[in-house]
Image (cartoon, rainbow, N blue to C red; front, side, top):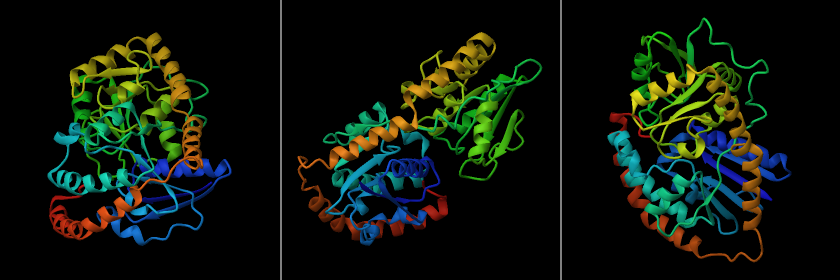
Amino acid sequence: MKIWFPYIYAGTGSDQFTKVLSEALRARGHEVIVSCFSHAWQYFPWRLFIEPVPAGTDIIVANSWNAFAFKRPKSKLVVVEHLFVLDPALGPYRSYAQSIFHNILVRYFVGSSYQAADKVVALSKYAWQRMVDVFPQLNPVIIRNGIDTDYFNPATDGKESLEGRKVRLLFVGNPTQRKGADLLPQIIRQLGQGFELYYTSGLHMEDTFRGISGMVPLGRLDRVGVKAAYRAADLFLFPSRLEGMPLAVMEALSCGTPAVVSDASSFPEMIQNSVNGRVCRKDDVCGMVDAIRDTVFDLHKLSLMGKAARESALEQFSLSRMVREYEQLLKSMLDPSQKFTQANKRHVDYRLRHSIYLDNTVENWTEQSDANGKAY
């Protein structure tokens, strides 16, 4: 197969997904081309319609926010929904500028991409349900993300003994409200002197938690550094309010580090409470504090949860499983018995009909977002 992965740079896990899946499919003998476009194109993705498709492309794999711009008559289109931002659960946690961007522009972009798609992929059962709630005619397939469980593995000598040191918690990700970063200082304050919370800077380099007792900045880590951080941590803390299928949680589990998460979105599909981690009510700081204390103060339980974390990563979140499922999906789409739909023509008409409106909307919106900060 010849597969094209066009994407607009976001600096998030969706970029990493594209890199990992494209490399894995290339290693399996497929001809793969990856095209990265500037982040600025996220506001005007329909203008990428003029971008030529690599000759002989069988299948195009793209993000839901811009996939419609890459639809071509002679190639099949797979749309991957990494984070369904039209989920009402996200409402309280986005800025005014984000609300405008998501509800006016992204709604058009996502709807156009779904309409153009030959297949739509959801990352979890939760995402599948939310997508169908908003777009009832949609019938996505579910393929969970995967990570390199051979690379992200436990240290050969196991975890360092807790005797004589503080408990190490770890948060990896952008310090946004959606990811529950505002809860981190509250959690560490309630835990008290026996705990330290290490955190990365994520996409944004500013130190949001500078000067807060018990919080230790790690900066922006490379792949080697983040693996070392997962291994060194006793628990991975991720109180996010909405996720697709977060790679950071999978990577922590794969390194034998149990995760403490909220019960929001896809987390209950990833974490079995008191087995490979703890699942707490969303925004329940006291519940998370109690879960952390209960886990680390029972060393036998903590050890068993670490082993279960690694086993769950191997069974559910391996890269080989994800690549195999995507390869099966792509091959099934090229089966001669599959009929070509009329989605292409309907989609092109839709995009052209709205392109002038969207140009004007984006011009007005970007003026406002410049004054209010980034909207993604």
